[in-house]
Amino acid sequence: MKDKDVDIEALQDFYKSLCELIGVDAMLVVYQHYRGSQLTIPTHLYDRKRASRQVVRKFTGSNSMQLAREYGYSQKWVHKVIRDNKNKG
Image (cartoon, rainbow, N blue to C red; front, top):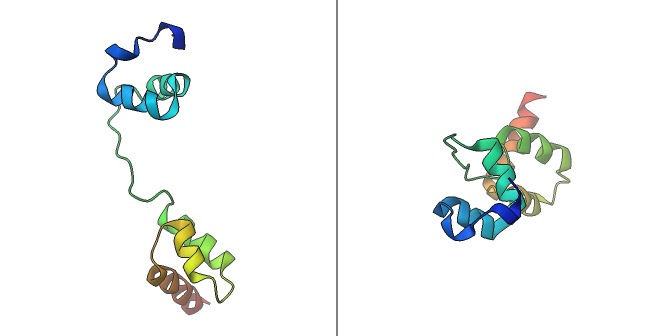
């Protein structure tokens, strides 16, 4: 199916809003890949375990607020990750 073949006015609400958000071509890719699937969209963009590894790697001693913003977790969480990592080693 090509984007010129898509009748946007007849789309399911989900696909119509997705089309408005990312465009017809990208919506069709999502449709082809996930059609029929039940999707749960996680609240956080980054996986907690993977983000914690990155936080440990990037932590300079004074950038916890920046890391919290970057990964979408709290500054308290960043401090806990750093503390837990120190306790392991």
